[in-house]
Image 1 (spheres, rainbow, N blue to C red):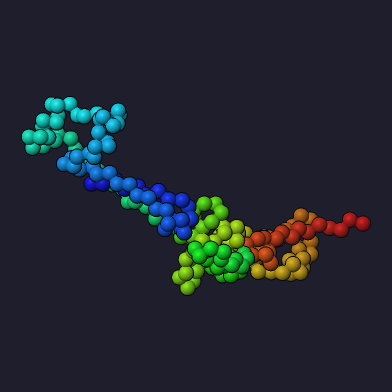
Image 2: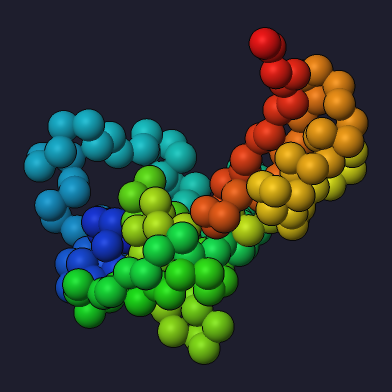
Length: 188
């Protein structure tokens, strides 16, 4: 059994260049290298001679074996996003964005840069503020929400209703945003 740790920074380019790996064996049969022994590491203690002699004579240990290690990664739900703006790559590991195109988020490296895949299978980093989550809205269950209407259509509906404070929420012409129209009677 071994424990492996991988240390890297958050960029995929740096991940490939600066990966450092450590490995520690958990096997009872392997000896610690000299640098990990008691003289070099004060925190390292040898087992009492009574327990060590049981192991040396081949007698089975009375301890239960360790449980299996959990899966290394918990699968995350993939997020679909839509590009709000065009983005031209500045680094080899960046992915170009085209306004209104959909992308799949593979990993959120940090709040500002996410790894994404386009519809052609190309992968790379994108600025998170250039995209909006493309999830189905629960707004459609409300009578005050009208998905695809213009400002003029919203005003006409509100005038027909002619009720002070009546409102309509609709999709904005700016992708990923909403607009609210409120009816107020003219005061003369």
